[in-house]
Length: 228
Image 1 (tube, rainbow, N blue to C red):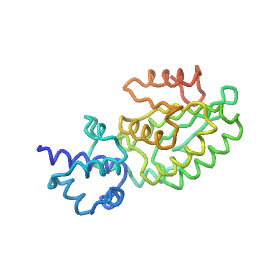
Image 2 (image 1 turned 30 degrees about the vertical axis):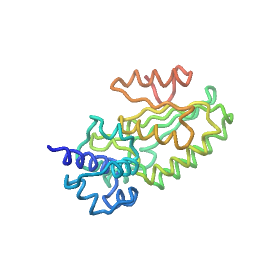
Image 3 (image 1 turned 90 degrees about the horizontal axis):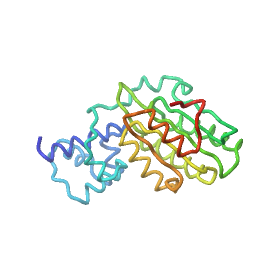
């Protein structure tokens, strides 16, 4: 496979992983949809300026774009996933003694889902001491057909709003990721919201090691929802 075809394939797999159409990516990158199609087919010799536009639209660092983590060439966003009750895709717990709010995401979330979750989590914050709350977030269950996926850009925008709201309430934030892609996107999100100063995102092949590191970062030894 030549370099242009390989580049186009990478654009397509990351676009599908984020649940974006070619048109949606074109709008976010400020490029023509037909241009995106040409890039994905390996027909365009992409300029450095447009590579920058594409990676920003995909919300990944350029270094990650050329990483060796690869995904299947189909969208993980299955309509059947949305038919599951939100209670099956999102669960949370409040530990009043440790001042920890923990939650797990186990499926696809729509913008409406994120809005409902945000309401619950904001309410949960009012039960704890402002500025002393620790968040333990487990996104490892965000999979469909065995493939990891990330939030859609639209859902991610709502999560960005939630992070900005929660920032003054939080002391530390630990997130368990399902891929290097998710870790990279959350790193970027944290930089935009200011959460990067108090948060760490963990990804690795050993689940127990990930959780242990997250516990150590938060200064806790156990959690009712998430265990080593």
